[in-house]
Image (tube, rainbow, N blue to C red):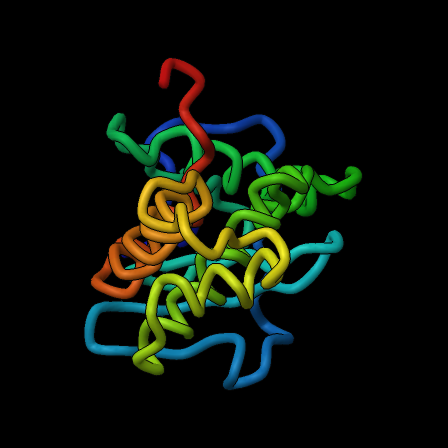
Length: 176
């Protein structure tokens, strides 16, 4: 399950003021029964919230969100806080899709480099497309920093294509 899909179940703790999770007005596209339980897509509070639950919630019963302590904890906690804020009528959290401008620019280069590689282009041709032909030297290409950068961009794109795309949802770790 993706870390941004929140697992919701009845809470074992009594709550003085449970927040109502009303799913009665959802369309079939927003509320689906599958073999593993109910899949819910809520769109409010300026965000899309995805939930999974074994049984539909009963009105007036407190609900709990499971937050396993693993490498995706921070992402799940942010998704849970965003849902709680939306259900409480508060302003939404910063979007999970929000990334710093330099990360978006790098990802654009990664995807363009991957497209070039998948089309059978050479590293030199990819670099010319990414950085401009004028920046690519005629003779010292083999040792130029743009060659190494282009190779790294292609390698990152290939890693994403082979299943590493989930890394895009995870926040950058500050200890790296």
